[in-house]
Length: 105
Image (tube, rainbow, N blue to C red; front, side, top):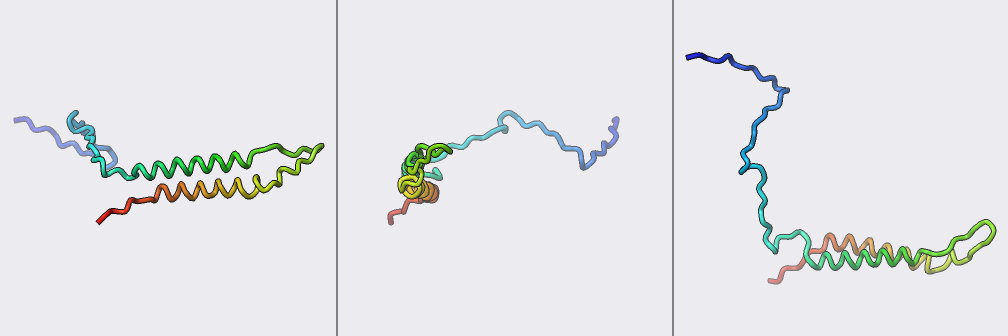
């Protein structure tokens, strides 16, 4: 019987092992009730995104130049209403992510 010399493996060398095809990737099916976000979360997110877009659209408008001053840049719609609606949209987006359904007893 011929014995093979012991190969010393350095701790810095990675051990290479090939996985069988059956062990490569296992995909488990998720039950319908186990999703992290429910349909209500997505509806709230869509509403929040619409509020953010409306807020930014309300802030749009003409600009002032060196030759002509446009007093509309200081309108209530642009400096109060638009940013407030956009901010409430961002708050609603945070609420939508954290929203959980109450379980009925």
